View 1 (cartoon, rainbow, N blue to C red):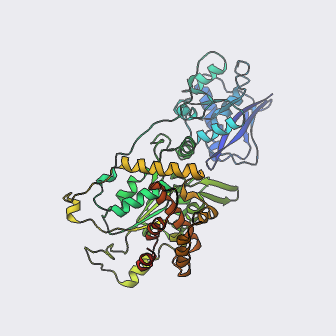
View 2 (cartoon, rainbow, N blue to C red; view 1 turned 180 degrees about the horizontal axis):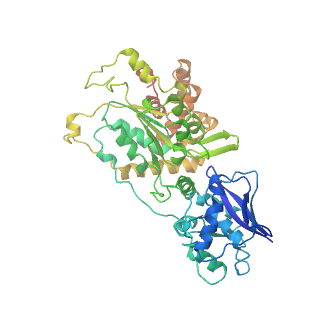
View 3 (spheres, rainbow, N blue to C red; view 1 turned 120 degrees about the vertical axis):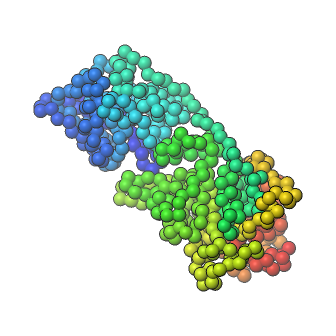
Length: 506
């Protein structure tokens, strides 16, 4: 008699269902696992029998063959322990009829019979729901995560013994109802704490409203990191679909218990590799770019990063996703984030500063600024050059009416709502055709853009990005139409735009 139990595996941030089949036969007692299992799954041959015996049940003295289908998919991870144990022991248990119907099981087993949680449970539960399965058996520590999927009946257990008793109708499970979200936290950091740097605050507002990428260049200690860390706090609240995507990524990376309702903020060290940034390894795992999906990816001192690593972000900046091609197949990973890159203008940090002289030679400055390629720079919408605030600004002796993050967030949310009602996405996510359509109907705008293209001030891609930024500026002002002043402000945020060109256009 063959017993089948449904379970699941991860592929990127998506779940795949797997069927565990167990069959007993006469012969010398032997426990065999087939179905392209990796090392962690093969170790279940040791963990499962010990856990069963520690739970007070006798391990069958038969030849047991366990198959995991489909056979062409590599089985990875320790979450298959529980379905293997259920399938092997089903004939020995006096189960209530229908207990295994429409059910998915996923948990690791300890040698003492305890159930342990696993990473990546949420995508597997979603895959089960899409396949028509409505019940999941999980460890208690995973129960709250499984309950995030609506329409799923969650049964949680502390030990394998309590689960077996439930299968026999002699015990109860811990049931969890649908939980729409885990927590809601607001950022404690506020933009009003930043002294001066009004241009950087303006750029941060535009970036948050339109989902535009941002480059901050300036001397050490001028506030670049402070601006970046406060950006998630003014971004629009996540929609239910966005929250589920963020939760799915957090589940895969094992960070679902930390600030899951806040926008992600990732700040990798400059020594990160390409695999660590965009994903890779064996087994394939998402990188920092996917962990930042729906939030902010902050590259501090971007000039110190490996050039190959930061260049690998090109696809994510352009398409909001990553395609990793391996022998096992093509893995599609979500990577729609706002990139905030911070850099010093030179190795000493004071090139162009009005308050302190630079010690670097011109060739050294040129080499340092060339660490980010032209194509990558062209994909960044907003370029801001900062200088150190004055002593009076630092000590709070100047008259400033610094906007708090809450006020900025309201304006950002209003502008994003306008964009969503008009086109169903943020301005930064518009395609080339939609972006070029923004310039139609205004002869002054068309003439100015032709002049910028003829003088090679803009590439065709840069033109689309300027139009998207100008549309966001118009939305922040509540303007239905795009005007030349919106375009001029957007051009001011482009790199190497001569000011005399802007002045003549004005």
